Amino acid sequence: MGGMSETGRLILLGAPLGNPADASTRLRDTLAAVDVVAAEDTRRLNRLARDLDVTIPGRIVSYFEGNEERRTPELVEVLTEGYVVALVTDGGMPSVSDPGYRLVRAALDAGVPVTAAPGPSAVTTALALSGLPSDRFCFEGFLPRAPGARRARLRALAAEERTLVLFEAPHRIAAALTDLADTFGADRPAAVCRELTKTYEEVLRRPLGELARWAADGDPRGEITLVVAGAPAVPGVRPDDDALRAAVAEREAAGRSRRDAITDVAAEYGLRRRDVYALVHK
Image (cartoon, rainbow, N blue to C red; front, side, top):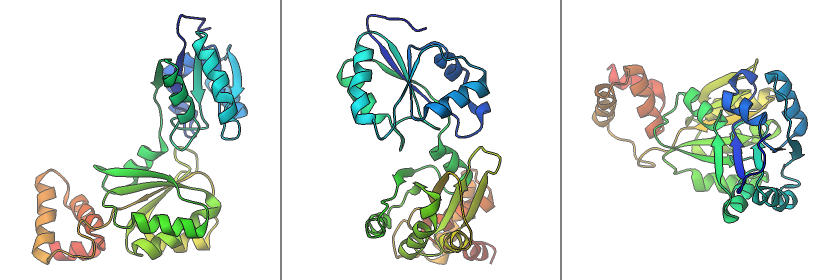
């Protein structure tokens, strides 16, 4: 085991989103060496350990939204006594819409070193798979659950020019997509990324209006990450045809394929891809 030292250490572990093969060697080695593992779901941790053929010799404690406030000072006490604690959530990096921030902050305030064995992230995985511009983006986590609060938040985000990444629960995705289409416009490009890295991974790249209809007609399940193109660079103002052609040419000159350049420009200005394609090939 890690054993006591003069100062303990908190290690944040990036856990697989679904496929155990994505676990890093450092994650395996850390689980097999630390004194305490704080897990969002102890059963899922034990299942992951079995999948990885790793024996966890340290003490396993639960650390989730319901006991986070109470358990944080207990873990800080363990850390200040010189023990090494690892924090792992159900998938992805701790603190990213998951338990972790409170413990990280408390450990730092207590003078305890904090480090990470980084791993998979649904945020960056979905962003990369979405086909939407990823040079600038912002992560909004989960939208408010109450319809009125959700719509108010979306109105505040409607002019955001960066690509947006959101998490949403399966039973709320249809309502959220409908509100997004109503607020951002049905033609705004987006992608629904479902069950990332798992057997039934699915990425749907469609305008918000089509995605809202897809969700309303079906029964989406599993972990869902939503990626939405940013607002036009100048909201409400469409560049003239020559400016749009020049924007595509500029991206091609920078090394983008014509197809990708057209997609980028359409997303940037909130236009339909086929309209920009028609302009370029006119």
